Image (cartoon, rainbow, N blue to C red; front, side, top):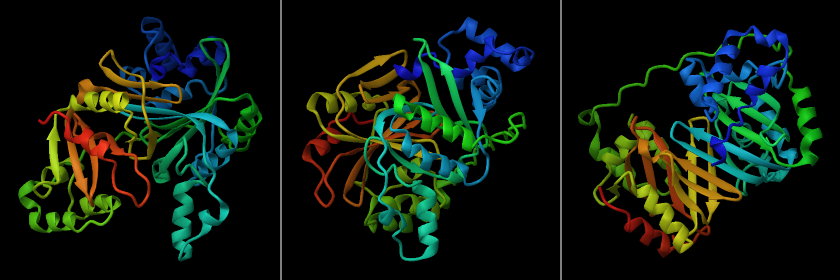
Amino acid sequence: MSFIRPILAVAIALAIGSAHAADPLLEQFNTLKAQQPRLQARDAARQLKVSEAELLATGIGSTVVRLSDASDAPREIMRRALDLGRVMALTRNENGVIETTGVATRLPKEAETASRDESEREARNLNIAGGYLGGPIDLRFQFAQWKHAFAVTAPGRDGAVTRSLQFFDANGNAVHKLYLRNEAGVAVFDKLAADFRHPRQDAPLGVTPAAPKAPSKADSAVDLAEFQLAWKEMTDVHQFNRIVAEFGLTREQALRLAPAGMVQKVTPQAVRKLLEDAARQQVGIMAFLGNGALIQIYSGKVNKVMAAEGWFNVLDPDVNLHLRETAFRSGYVVRRANVTSIEFFDDQGDLVVTFFGVRERGKPQPQSWLDLAAGLPKA
């Protein structure tokens, strides 16, 4: 499982530079890594009671370059990253990780700028960064949540140098990581890091603590009839988020309050059967995994699936999907606007991953996908 490999680039800084040796956080991380060499950066940060961004920043001056924190920098960095060529894109939330390898699709200029008015074009440019729609690296951005960026260059386990762009939100949580997977892109990476280099490498990050999770609205306070009517009137699945926000609901609450026949609850363990059946029957799937700042999408067939250390995994050459199924609390087969999806939530009520069937635009869902969804174990 590639995300479990000890690729924490900041660890290399432990042996570099006397200025870093006196950093108490770096010393604590050094001790922790010696005790738990396979520890992931996210889990190491949690144990040390800091954010992952702060932990990565201990490598500034050796393996890490802090990049610009200007409001438009993340979009422009990702736009420039389209020139890197073959990359591995990694997106995760607390209980899911998706990694896809390939070359991102660049949007034709006329498609990027086409819109009905200037404000719409501005919003479109903000969210697409010039590409990443469809293709192997398929991303949906919410750049307002991107706050900290770094370029990381460090030796990997096999001695080869790894280069990555790593992005974090205001709380220091990882938003997205982009790893270079070709030698031809090295010069592009180095120039990008130089062009966006933060003028004050030692400036405090200003990481802010996460706000407490807002309590959900009481079911009794929901205008149930109007909500269910809005659900039935959906003509596109993309309208769902707006409806959920309009009625002040959490996503899982909306599924619980859905009109009769629109939602079937399944067991949390159904995610394993879904992926096993999809692999065995070669049913094309779409997996959506995000974290509030970015959604990464994989579309295609899966082949090698297996369980390991509390995670259920897809381990194919160009896509890895890792789901901490031990933290899953609930699953739902959902029908909206005549489209069937399957959603899984963790023990905090947060959405981990959503699956759709692959289908051609304007054509009905494949019966194989509908059969797969119908065959999942009911809760």
